[in-house]
Length: 224
Image 1 (cartoon, rainbow, N blue to C red):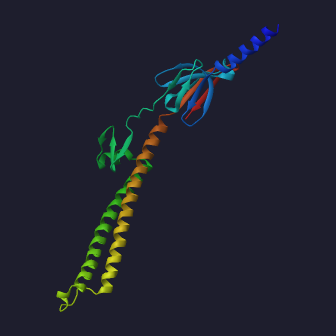
Image 2: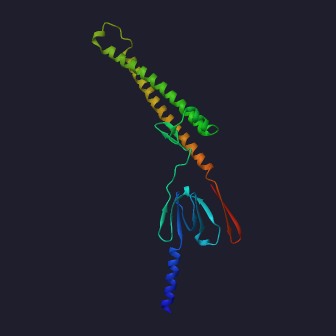
């Protein structure tokens, strides 16, 4: 009698521990389920605690891996979404092809990404102009130092005084640094524009409606 009872307990423990599947989502969530089917785009499952309940469907793009009750593990690699943008060397590409300024503006039309992209272009132009201006002013300052220190030019009045040379050199240096900062901010704004476009495109295509039968009727689940 005791052996029979122990065998039953061990059997129940084994069923409880090894009859469920596990779905790990990319956001870190772990689901204890019974996997019904895996298609090229979706994973279909029922909750382990309600195996006669609704059949749920989840996009494979949201799933990191599935661990089956027999110990087999299936890991899903993220496939790049078509028509997503990439920023390489501050140039925007789609599907490996570099886009022109006109194509980018047409693609961003009607989105907040267009404003960021235009802002990045404005900052880049400003950064280039300020850097050039700074280099010219700095050059004048350095030229003033040279003319004031050259013994062969002592009989000739220097173009600018030593104090003016210091002012020009410092001012030019500040302008050049400001130009570098503007150029960096330009690249950052362009990167944000690309990410904003990719995220908005992904959200628009990740909606799914799950319909299944429960013990009380029909259940629906909207995933986004």
